[in-house]
Amino acid sequence: MVAGPSGAGKDTLIKRALQVVPRARLSISATTRAPREGEEHGRDYHFLTEDEFDRLVGEGAFLEWARVFSGRYGTLSSDVEKMRDEGIDVILEIDVQGALQVKDKLPDARFVFIMPSSLEVLEERLRRRGLDSEPEIGKRLGIAPKEIEIGKREFDVIIVNDELEKATEELVSVLKGEGV
Ligand code: ADP
Ligand code: 5GP
Image 1 (cartoon, helix red, strand yellow):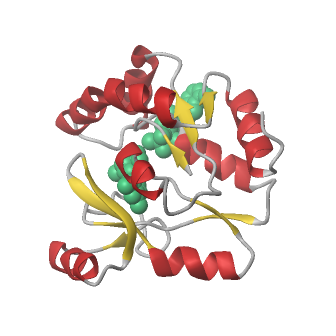
Image 2 (cartoon, protein in one colour):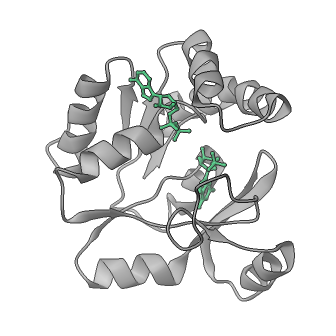
Image 3 (cartoon, helix red, strand yellow):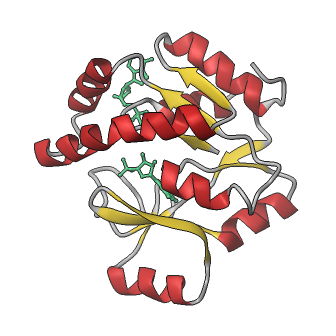
């Protein structure tokens, strides 16, 4: 389980760590947000309509889901079960609300929080990433202090993503079960 404010570097660190930990894989979430340029259905997310998302909620198909910023995001139980049956270490990249929902359901999961070195750095990274509109960046920054507070209180491991190389090594250690 990897959570942290938007722009903290979750995607970057997970992609780098996966190159050295072959038995781990990232679960693909479902979302109602629109695809960004270059994003593909089934690779980055399962992009769903509000109706499709509602139907899956009604069917109890989600291990967890939450409203985050301008959309709903969720993890499909069937995806996670299938990977676990295949012996894959599943990584969930989800927000803190979703993470708290799975705490009871996945007692053996490790809770990793990716922390930006400061809110200023977070803002700079969100801007430099250039993927979100100004109002969207505002929403993401606005919620970050609360997320950080929950991360400090509820998570097992906190990785400060200051120096990329060092933070990647810390995540790799956790994925290999070595702790940090
Ligand atoms: P998240 O998945 O948490 O929203 P990203 O992985 O998309 O965050 O990272 C946000 C931006 O910050 C990206 O442009 C990424 O290249 C950059 N970034 C991530 N980690 C670092 C780092 N340690 N130093 C500098 N820039 C970084
Ligand atoms: P983005 O829109 O930048 O792709 O993702 C925004 C945020 O949604 C991420 O920072 C991540 O924490 C959260 N997120 C992505 N997938 C899921 C999911 O399946 N469940 C929950 N609860 N949050 C998710």
